[in-house]
Structures are given as structure tokens and as C-alpha cells.
Amino acid sequence: MEKIKVSEDTYLVGIGVSPGISVGEICLLDQRPMINQSLIEPAEVDAELVRFQQAVDRAREQLEKIKQAVSKQQHLREHLYILDTHLLILEDEMLVDGTKKAIRGQMNAEGALSQVLKQLRALFDKIDDEYLRERHSDVDAVGERLLRILTGVGERSIGKNGQKSLVVAHDLSPAETMQMDRSKILGFMTDKGGRTSHTAILARSLNIPAVVGLESITSMVSEGMSVIIDGSNGVVILKPSEETLKEYLQRKKNYEHLELELENYYGLPSVTIDQIYIPLRGNLEIASDIEQAKKYAAEGIGLYRTEFLYLGRSEPPDEEEQFKAYCKILQQAEGELVTIRTLDIGGDKFVPELNLADEANPAMGLRAIRFSLHEGHLFRIQLRAILRASSCGRVRILFPMISGVAEIRACKQILSEIQSELDREGVAYDSGLAIGIMIETPSAVMIAPLLAQEVDFFSIGTNDLIQYFLAVDRGNEHVAYLYDPLHPAILRALKATCDAANSAGIEVCICGEMAGESLYTLVLVGLGLHELSMNPACVPRVKRVLRQISKQDGELLVDKLLSLSTSKEVSIMIENEMRNRLPDIFAQPLI
Ligand code: PEP
Ligand code: MG
Image 1: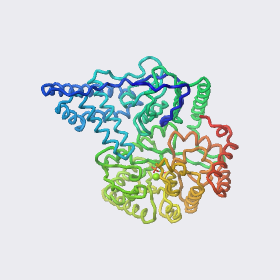
Image 2: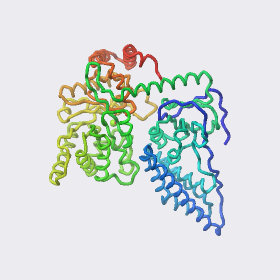
Image 3: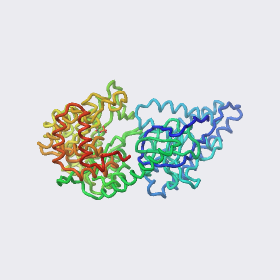
Image 4: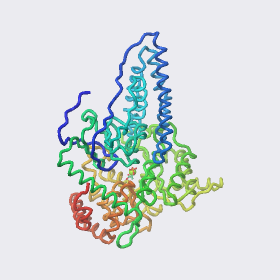
């Protein structure tokens, strides 16, 4: 492949999926198998079929071997499912039978396989859901393994040259990522990948900085080239100049210092200086995030997005499977509270297996609670599983996207029917289980005092609340400049919701991304929120701020903010206030 010429200080921007900064030399893993696609004689077909089958068997052996090695490593054991997925793909009809069919059509094995892989890729590209679309990387990884065996290009070895390096690859298969000797890897950079790719998930659990989706880094770098990776900001700098190197080494020092310093906060209570206790909880995207939540000492789970259980499978999980999954989380939570949100699909969270209707406006369509009430049987299965799990630990239940009182009453009615059913069956559950709703639609804000009479707690979902309040699609980059948590309308919406909850004497929490932004902690406390739930890695930073502010000061700041007319004014006032109060944290960005 022709390399693109790189000059000093070439900045590349990708998706930062695992934070931290590393500086070092590149280890390039770009030895890709060369495919020679050719036609064969009818007499050669049988031999080619055998060659392909042998490659499949060899790939299975390799994966089994990696599985054995990985199962001995405690920190990687939970990712064994990735290897099982690969083993399953090796049995996939479309892949294996499709290739054999093409061989029978007189094509050589590697040609037949790469043709089938291309067709599969085209199918995956049509999938709307980002998570599922990225699963094609598993099929690609298995395909590449087979192609390497067929073409005789050996397995890629990573971190075996004895030197610590920054790995650059077109894509890294999960199996490869797992085999790496972590002590020799300083970071990952890939052309491909997205936020939910396995490389991203694994990099986070290995605590190694990673930037993915760089598109063409493999065509720009060579073995041994110097590089800086900044996983926090999604930036990669090739051939850094002396000056840049100096700057980033300082940033790296600051980052590591901050990380170390933040560890001091892990065991400290999350209280303000005026002794208001504000639990900082973790958001769970996938079950393994519970480990992160525990690492960063999040106090229980403020939002467990159960959608993940339904993704990437042909049938929705049954009651028993859900019951077990919830109980497992509860056991891992060791007595801490876990907030289980019922299925929130539709909108940007598409689950094709559930045959959602093709809608012109999915964000405003049959989404979240609307879908659950429409598909009552699925809803009942999930509620039964949650109720049963409530006997394994401290659970509360959260209904997403409630837009009116009738909806929450319908949920409560179904819940009480299921409780009676369980009573009749003599099945144990927590009869005092708290019920809450997400406040994420404008109508819910407007009738918050009415809704507060119906439930035990509110959880404000600012990700959607901002989308619906400001009429800005949360996933549309063209209107991203309008997506603004500090818009005066949003501040008023938050204030109205908190006031309604506080007057009714119920809990009010926030679980949108805004909760994890430490610059906003004083404002959120001043608004009267009782709990903040966030990406677990944000907990220590938010706690550090929380312990140095008072609720009273927050209330004074909120009063002033509510008199301002534009988000620009709001953000300047917040930044000034935080810089003056906590100069060591906010005077200059540390990284
Ligand atoms: C939200 O909308 O703020 C929220 C937390 O839920 P999700 O991001 O899953 O829609
Ligand atoms: Mg939401």
C-alpha cells in the first residue's frame, strides 16, 4: 500500500474511547492477507472444498486455544463471550455454506470467502442500529482469520517484540486484543471502530488509552514512527515536534496526577460542605460496567439501561434469563441500590428483532414505554423478572419516556396485576419496591406536580429532555450546535421538575450525561437534585467538586442563572463562578 507522506505534528482526530495519554513508538499491524481471486477447474472443486473446511477447523482450534488462555486471566474472563461469538460465526450458514456454494461455482477458496464477506458487509451496512452495525467487525475478524490461514499469512502478534509500543491497526479483532500482553501496550489506534466496538469496550476495561475511527491511520504510519495518543480527546499526533511532545508530557503528568489524586476520593462520602448527602450513582450500559462502577466507588446504579439485553439476538430474552441477569447485577452491587429501567427501545435505539414499525419520526414514535404498553406480553415478562429479582437485592424500577399521567397509571396497574400473580404463585418479591419515571418529555415537565403524586421518584433524562425541549435531534450533527444543556429553557425545566418533586416530598435524580459534568455540579445541587447518576468514570471528579461546594451557594447561583437570557451568558457565569471557587480545578483545563 502506498503510504501518505506525514509531516511533523500531523494531528488526526478520531473517537476517543478510552481515556489517558501515551507517548511512544508505533507497532504497526497491517500485514493483511493478499487475496488472489481466481477461477478453478471443475476437477479442483473438491480439493478446494477440503482446503476451506480445513481452514475452518484450524480457525476453531486457534479460537479454542485463545479461549483457554484467556479464561486463566481474571480481568479478561468476562469477555470470553466474544470468542464464543466468533466460534458461532464459524458455523454460520451464510458464511460457511455461502463460501462452499461459491467454490462449487468454480472459484478458489479465498476468492469465494472474500466475495461472501463483501456481501455480508453490505448487509450489515444497511442496519441502522450502531451497536448491531458494528458487530460486522466480528464477522470481519473471523473472515480475516480464515483468510490468513488460507493464504498462509500468520497470525498477527502483538506486544511480542519486547518493547512497549502503541498499536496501530486497520481494526483489532477482540480475540487479538485479548491475547495482547498488556504490559507491552501503551495504546490502541485503529482505522475502524466506534464507541461500542469491542476494541473500545476492552480498551476501557484494560485501562489503556484508545482512539478508534481514525479512517486512514494505517496508510500514514510506519513501524517505529513516534506518536502521541490522547484517548480523552480522541486525538493522535504523528511525528510530534519537541514542543508538542513537551506539552503532552506535561498533560500526561497532569492527567496521571489527577487520576492518582482522585483515588483519594474513592472512599470519601459524597457530601457538600453544608453536609448535604448527594449519592453519586453509576449508569450501566452493559452488565460489565458494574465493575467500573465499583472501581470508581459509585454508590449503586442510578440507571441500568436494559436495552442491551435485547440487542444482537433473534429472540428477546425470556423471564428466566432476565431474572438471572438482574440478580447477577444485584449480587455484584453488594447491597447497593440498583435502578432498573424498563426497555427503552425505538428512536435511536433500534432493535430489529423486535420488528418495530418503520416510522417517519422514530424519536416521537412507538418508543420506550409506548412500545412496552403496546407489546404488553414483553412488558409483563420484564416486569415479572424485575419483581422476582427484587428479592435478591435493593431494586427500584424506572419507566422511560412517560408523557402523561394515564401512562404511568397503566404501568402501575400492570405492575400490581403481576404482583397479585406472584402472590398467588407464592413467589417472593419486594412489596415496597420504589417506582419512578424518567422526566424527559416537555409534557412530563409541565405536569410534574401531577406526576409526582403518582410515583416515588423522578429521574431526569437530560439527553432526551434537551432533544425534545429544544426540538434538536440528539444524534444529528447538523443541529448539534443547538443541543445545549445550558439553554435557559432547560434550566427552567430542571428547576420546575425539582420544585415539583421537592414540594411533593419525593426524590429527584438526574441520569443524563449532564450529571457527569463536574462544571455543572454546583448548579445541579443548587437546583435541588437529590442524586446524580453518571458514567462511573466521572464519579471521582464530580465527588471532588461536590465535597467543596455548598447547596446554599448552588441555590444562590441558580437564582442568578435564572435571570439570564442566553446560554452564552449562563455558561460564562457558571465558568466564572467555578473558576473563582475552585481555581485548582477549573482555572485551566488539565488535559
Ligand atoms: C436520557 O435521555 O437522558 C437518558 C439517560 O436516557 P437515554 O440516554 O438512554 O435515552
Ligand atoms: Mg432517554
